[in-house]
Amino acid sequence: MGSPIPTVGETAPDFTLSNQYGEQISLSDFQGRKNVVVMFYPFAFTGTCTRELGVLRDRPADFDNDDTVTLSISCDSVPSLKVFSMQENLTHHLLSDYWPHGEVSRAYGVFLEDKGFATRGTFVIDKEGVIRWLVVNPPGEGRDADHYAAALAALR
Image 1 (spheres, helix red, strand yellow):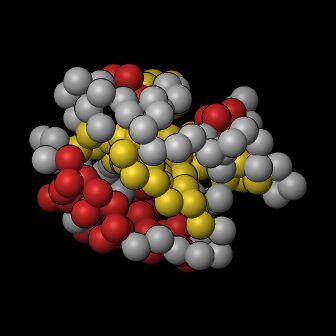
Image 2 (cartoon, one colour):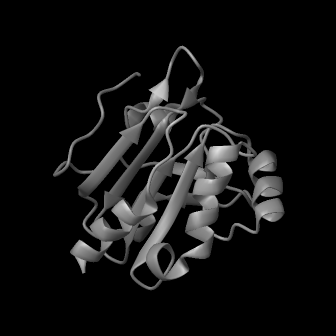
């Protein structure tokens, strides 16, 4: 991995990426307004990634509501993310870290240089932009959304 993984209590690195519709989305767009779940995943259309994002889709009360927004980030291209979101009925922002390749993933310390993609990292960021909870798993090891739902509940 590139940069060190930010720690709880640090200000989250800001970024601007295109979502699946080509709209520019910045982490700072939500500062002062919403808690943010930043979820890195290896690839669209793969089994574990599709399951994890499906959980987010199926639990909008936890992850996409008046108090919280979820930003899922992969190194896939915008057109791939658009097809993936349509195929899986994903309504939250899928952000493309395609070019410069892995730049945001590197800033969060989750880019696997030897593989060319991000591992599974989730960061819960409060309304002030501070990381309040995180988990980083290897590519083949899925995450439990209940853990980041509990971290969000603790911010309320």
